[in-house]
Image (cartoon, rainbow, N blue to C red):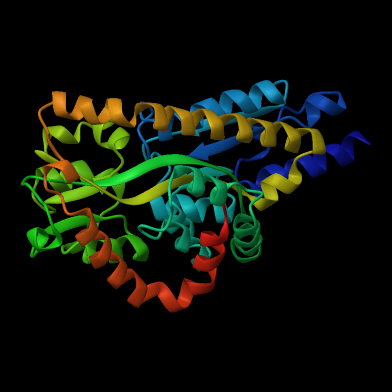
Amino acid sequence: MTRQLFSVTRRGALALGLGAGAFAMVPGLARAQSVTLRYGHNNEPASVAGAQADWFAEAVGKHSGGDIAVQVYPSSQLGKLQELAEAVSLGTIAFSHNTAGGIGSLYEPFAALDTPYLYRDVDHLMKVMDINSPVMQELNQGLIQAANVRVIYAHYFGRRNLTANKAVYKPADLAGEKIRAVPFPIYQAAIEGMGAAPVPVDWSEVPTALATGVVAGQENPVNVILNVKLYEVQSHLMLTGHMSNAEVVVMNEDAWQALSPAQKEAVAAAALEIRERATRAIQDNEAKDTQALRDAGMTVIGPEDGLDVEAFRASVSKVVDARFGEKYGALYEKIRAIS
């Protein structure tokens, strides 16, 4: 019996790319099935997206009674965005988080969830991104089949806003400007629709790209802009709110299936707890973070200052509809139907 338990546990470790040492191989059934899983991501630990990975690791340990240990590797230590997505698919790491557009590199329809100006409000976004929503259930099943990856939760990441070193009020103001785009198609289309020339740059390289003039601007939620101190290399923040994002936390399917029922319940309980905690942390601080950017010296331009949000909406939607409308049209209808 002991020999059989060791064999099963070792295979699970090798499937995760962790090696047999990832498991506590000691006498007794419960201890023999304990597991250490790696979580790699690209965010700084001080940001909410980065901190929630640590919160999740702590919550998994708590809910599993210490039976599951999650080791977190932040700040692109284990790879860039695309590499992290692929690492979860291959099983070299167990967990990561990414934008829906990034997950779309594994299963293309997933990228539809990051379509600009798609959601009515944050409540609508989070209902769609709930793992039990009909849209997420459909996409999650496709993701599992296509890439051996499952979504375990998604939290609110924020509304994405433009930064630059000049005032921007309408798409025409970005003509000829090179703006960093998250290196996935839906994001490049959004930047093009905003009137700029999209330049794909991985997040780990953005501060340097801005400082050296490789790109003239970028777009992100205010929490991210504040925590990486982009106000040191960008003078203006435009509250375009062109995309409402959820950060999607994914897990290797083999790793999930290797867990016992009790361990799966622990991961699910931790997921629900951290989804809610991280969402609240972003929502409660968006206005505060925006003010902190003002206090740090950024000029903040909103609709009350002449920012033509409707011009951005029309321009971005035209490009996105032309490029993705036919491909994702049925999915958009299902998203809009959720209330």
